[in-house]
Image (tube, rainbow, N blue to C red):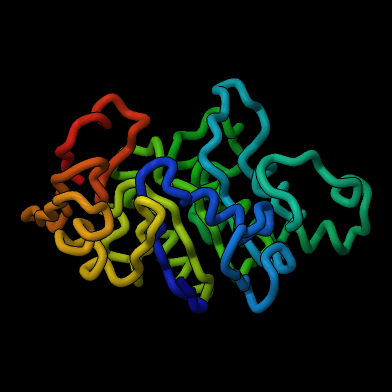
Length: 261
């Protein structure tokens, strides 16, 4: 697979198919046992300062007092992800650097539309608001590549659509390449340039129409898979072992063979 600047690509597949592993390989956290990879023109890991990375969703306790703006500010250290401890320069570093960091934080918060609640304790923010702030953290260093690991997970349908829309806007406005891991392609359908689907140790790449297709997915899974299109444009996949357009074995219904995406 390959990605170009400003492309929005979804990485799909069942749990255990290798989606998160692929992101870790791109970050240089895992080495390939075969094949090759080039990230932003060089070996994986060399350009991590130019990559924004959002790991799989963390849950913030309702009593967490750290403010949203503080969460975003922690992304100013481009070599670390998650919720690292503040670096010494952030506490007593040069005033010019602190001012530049503050400006980048403000810009990232505005970019994701979180200004209205960024100064609230993160534990008091809704799931969708928290996810916006975490994406702002990944954007604070103005990355060229954005890797998002299941950013829609655990969000309700309206928030999934909202997050998908502003990620697409960021991709278009900032020229950032976005690789987004997802279980359900439906909230992303209006915005994607391409999809990459992993299954059974193989992969297929192309547009949504080329990949989320009965014949293509049946060949990939080596079992009959049928893709239907609902009146509202959403994809419904019938087949096994896991429906490709919508599957999530963390939920109780994951053992069923028929799902509406």
